[in-house]
Length: 627
Ligand code: FES
Image (tube, rainbow, N blue to C red; front, side, top):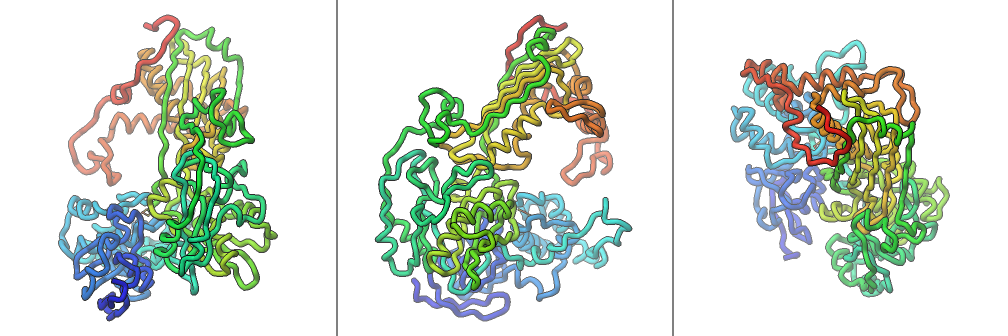
């Protein structure tokens, strides 16, 4: 019903607009009225970032057809308080620091406001329940719930307004808790993320993605798509004027598939059009002929002779092998009383930042190709892009937009090149915002790993030798794999000193979604294996899990397996505190940071149950059993 005219009251203002192609209330608010405080996190009613009030009721605007809101009174986060002032809820979020990346925060503020409007005396449990439809990926919920409780008490007069003021300035910023300077723009929804940015004459990009894991591209015909009214340009690998390759270590990834596709979801072509709807229609008119190739999805299979080759330059599918050797491993195993071997697996993990990938590119009046995007590595991106588009470095500019959660997942340059090419080809600004599905299918993930541990120990728990072999699935492109393999090898044995050690980490190409940077950068996989294996060895030796760690931990003066002598080391203290908390000596910590005994609760002191809680798999064992 494109000719229908909508009549609404939005933030106290009468609005009369054609419905246009904005079928969801969220699109109408964002694209027609430019009220971008309501954000799209999932597009499926799960995350709550798009929450607004419709006739006083909290709704998820991504689920509401615009027509259904005709005649309604809408209130968005921008309408909660006049410019330059904040509601008690917003001030409380500022006070407690409940706005890290901030992408979820406008939705959280709306849900908190709804909770206190509906029940001004809502207790902690009810607040938790009422905010249950909103997801935060980085602040965590403790500060958010604390903010709502403070706002509730200030509104009810139980706390003075000064409870929302900043704490008195400390003498030094070091060690002091400081307020986030960007919190007001986050709690009011006024901060502009890349997907919120709008420029005059702006085009909208949509991307055609591969349905195949491994296939040769026989031909691409974009003529029908280009002829569709409203389409400004279609780009493919043929439009790249320079050296078409990017990546953090090895530049093996083209801007769009060149000659063949290597994973499902790889970009093949991109359309820029007057609207997202037209661009989507045009994607359906692009004809791609593929010739499917054998694919490989398991890194150990990809290492075998005869496995499908994913990149011609790497016939063995090896992205990177990092070996580290220390001492004499065979001699170390020979002097052991017990040898324990086991294999540990970790899975692929999605970053799931609330802000999906987005960017806006244009060529400025001085001919500088300019890209706004939440890139976590803009200097590197800039240098790579200059080569790809064959422009001098001073004609390429990257501007880092606010990052609505990254966790390492926005270090790789997977879409900025397409935006730059389209802006150059069309001569107009171009914006791309991934759907949640695209974000999941096309962005890098945490490396899945399979780690085989072999450890030799004396009967008193001292380690004599370790052999550590990690096979990681790097996916279709190198991205950060080399760095992750280096870090995994360096951190392979954690904070423990081993006299004889053999470490091998391998990053392997497969036809899976590429793996890339993710918080901890290889440490998570290795530490999971190391700490699990130590528990297993402690169980075999009848030792306390803390004791086996104490006997092997690094101290000041220890030398790491990469030859670094430690001048400081807090491992002993870390272990002491971890032990104290594991044994629940002060009572189990609650979700709000206090302990039960602090709150006058029952004594929950228990012996350490570390070994019992993690039931270890059966491991291979050799040499004599230890009494
Ligand atoms: Fe909640 Fe980042 S602050 S998702």
